[in-house]
Length: 131
Length: 149
Image (cartoon, rainbow over all chains, first blue to last red; front, side):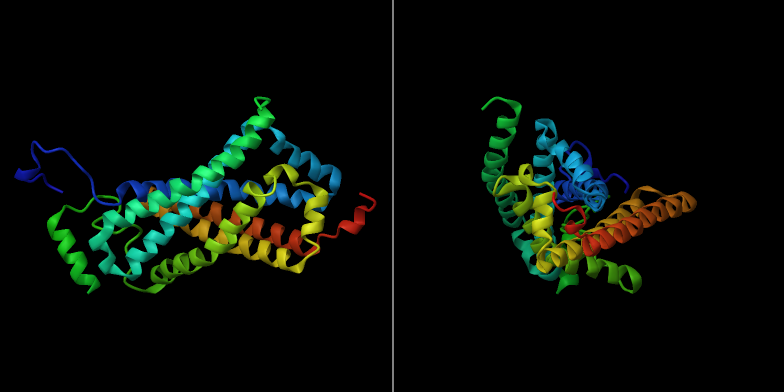
């Protein structure tokens, strides 16, 4: 788009929803890539307890558990932001309150992640030998 | 009414190259295949809200999380047809929802048709293979083959 006179000397503030749009993509890609690996690691159970328990032993490492916390956060964000997308899609009048909608979904995500981080963080710190 | 709102918002601010206007997600396609996949993402999204978020909370957060998962745990869990069905539905919907998401992203960033086709085919083959593998395992798994564990 050609620069208009009013654009010159102003700070680009982007478009509403651009950050949640980007975060939705990143969390979506992260989750599907993990899912590809997760189907394989779960399928190992078909080869018996010895093979499967060797695989699940990977999850007894605190660094892997930290990544797992990231996975949980990605799924939660994608789910909550997905609801926001559907509200905007199917109820266009809600765009009048777009800012409130964004604040509510971000708040719900962060508010939900506090107890989740507390619970999972406890296990991570125990595995790391801190607790 | 939808068109009204959109027209007004476009008037006030320049379209960004990404989300555009007030659209939190992808703009609704006019029709055909793209409209059906657009609709599928939203319908599967609602179902995954229960299946995926439920799975994440049960398996990763509550009751000791993933630390309690081993052969015996899964054998007991898959003793119930409910969890086998849940896991299979989650497998199918998440794979298709995910691969379609990848397709939309590839559409945005991979412009050369031959490369785009190759990338999409790669993800489609991976998805189909994993769907078959997961389906076979979730429905044929029999822990008694290894008893006593």
